[in-house]
Image (cartoon, rainbow, N blue to C red; front, side):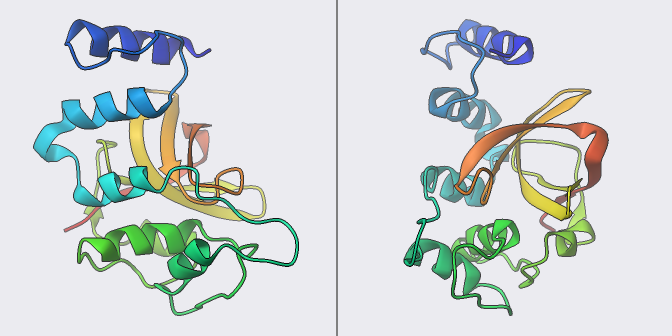
Length: 174
């Protein structure tokens, strides 16, 4: 349970946008309410990303064809779901609504893409992580934390809370 999400859910409920349990967890109902609150400011690619929630790597010999499709939107065109795929996912989501991403499988490629963002719903967030970088979409941000909807977060498309101390860049499509 996260106190910041309790506050968010309470406000969303007060505004008539959230009908779920106020539990401090950023789940699908909270995401839907946040996207509804953003209204026209919610980018179409974020709606695409939300529809992909739960897509995950397949352990063992097989690879998830959906993740291979994400990789196909980069110049790397990896053929295994075990290859880091956060940037592939962001590029794929953008391509679904005819927005040019970076075409790179490297998360850091988004650090200079588009224009500066403010941390609004749908902004592209680039951060450092052990062993490299990560890129995903902002769904909620406070002074100290950011909730990201992205690929390859726990080997699946999911929402994760991250500390903002590792923030590198926040971008938005031109």
